[in-house]
Length: 345
Image (cartoon, rainbow, N blue to C red):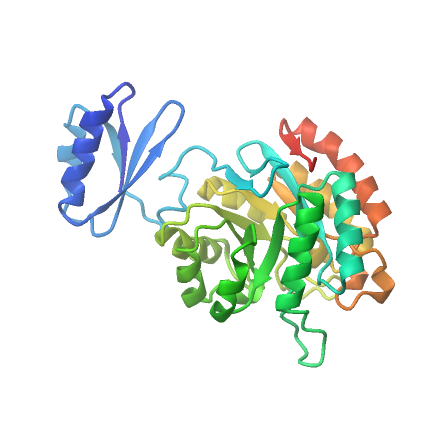
């Protein structure tokens, strides 16, 4: 249930009003926007009389929410959420609410020289975040699985050298203790419905980048976000990375419509992964332009200094020079959409 508070209502009266629901065992989610305050009731609100609420002098209107996701619902939080990441003295990074960010780096961390070289190059081109896989989920057990904890150490060294906040994937709950200095924890497509992991990430106090599963619906993605948010973590970034269809020419099929659908249903920022969607480096620029035009809040792009010798996903990785060209092109598109282009410093 959503309760929209009349503009100009005294804050103390609103707080006392909210307490009456908490006393009935219903959680109250406050959303204070620039012009409107909304109370979202989470829990068993079936016994609450909506007509009686409308008669209250503080209430403008009451709306019943049918969707199973509450905290991720735009009705609960009408204004766009801005996820803020403070990683170093280089300043705060923002994703969403008019701030467009690019996350770039290799599919997997392979060596000290490789990750530092790529980190410096993507920073120079204007990326706001460094991505890199330390733990890699691979379809084949014989493929490169990542450097594990050593890979995380290399990412943290790259962060120290460049000031770029790092985004890296967690594969299992047992790894969480290693992620204390990671800035944004990525949940990959295969783990989107690992609910035990999502619950724990709801208590970790770090921004979560949640990728859509290979065959997941928009509603299922939002329900997974709800698991994190129900634990108290409001900093969730949704990622459309392509879904599996009958098409085999590309690795996946980028669902451009999901961007609009997610932004209509939810207040959470939405970024797009054109690299995994296509699986082909020459398609990345076109899909990136499409994502910007559709209203995405950012991109996560794979960049490798020697794609032909990459230990994973070289065929979908841009070279540093190609990434630099992409960033120059995107800047114009982002500005046309009226968003600020958040760059590394």
